[in-house]
Image 1: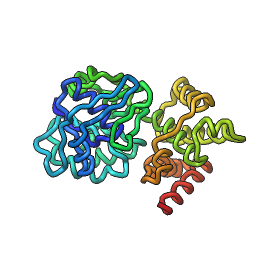
Image 2 (image 1 turned 60 degrees about the vertical axis):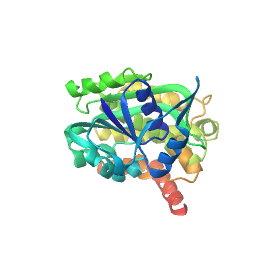
Image 3 (image 1 turned 30 degrees about the horizontal axis):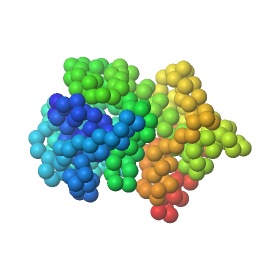
Length: 304
């Protein structure tokens, strides 16, 4: 299977590397700075098991040729418009597009551009970041990759995707209910991002602060009410596990949005929090805590 990995950051770099190591034909679509970095140093993975370096197959938008069987999009959500322009010539009659982005707005955006039948569901669970020299740092052994048809119909095209991905040295989950998985991932990451960004700290610091537990539970409840109104078929055991994970004071957690914010980078405020507020308004839901988070993030963006 010919695979185009749009992005070679922590997520795209890690999963793309594992696919390449498994023998798949993987090309990384990257910008000039990342292209030069990877050309010079290779794609470096620092994992709990040690350090690995591979020579990736690279391309920039101007040098892409031919169609790909699978395009995996792993950029930040605010870069999606440009990436759609870049990958458009590589989308052929049989191409499937699997976005691994935060939130859910990107699904409709990609479907409008490339057609509903081309876009499949995807998400990952990994604690990873980029080091100062562009190395991919996997901070814990967690490396799960979920995928499946958005309507649950995992036909022959999806079977081919599964055949390519399932032997790539990561924990793959071929789901027949990927939409619920996506809703639950959004519930987790948006709660985590909201409380960490608002409080400017990790969950351990928040939970051991006066009112911190109530803040986390309040944000969680608001988000759950929004996604339920939007169509999430609540799975009580799954949502209870998410809240339990977030509420453990022994395990300090932060979100990628919080880490980006503390480094002065652009953040996915509109895609992670802003979109929830738009959906809440559609159903006349009161979300005072999410409103406070959104104002906080807007002020940060104005001050950058």
